[in-house]
Length: 211
Image (spheres, rainbow, N blue to C red):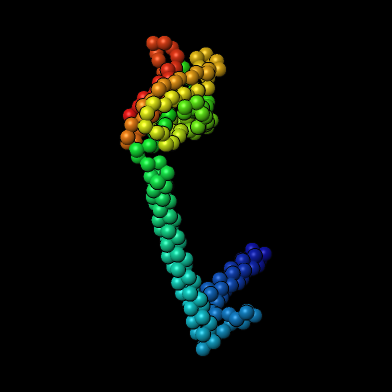
């Protein structure tokens, strides 16, 4: 008798649970107002229509935002190109081809030298000084070049001096300078300060190339 009583309670509980599940499934299709009351007929249709309209409005607003974002990105790219063209034009105006001279630095070193800074003189005057970051040294080590200075030089002979500081062989502080006479003629003039490893001398070499 006790077993039958337990079985009846079990089935009664199971039936109540099934009733709640069915009730919730049926209620999921209902439309409710702000107070939680179920809306039927025209009121329910009106609420569903407003909900659908709000969803469509949000979708259109998102489309407008996406289109605006694309226009902003295109404008940024156009601005970058315009600024680049303006810099080129400015350089052409400030540094005409017949007097322009540009000085670059390149680096091809390994274990004999780690560059820290460079100072550049033209005709005895300091025209550029730069201390290199780790990222800049990595870029130079991958074949990049650094534009140290651009100037106007008159036709004729001029003197150029460069002073380098860094860490040399065996971790010692290393200072080195190099000088060269340059002859400016008509047309563009490019000068490259080259730092390379000399395996034969077991130390860095500093040279000046004109082209």
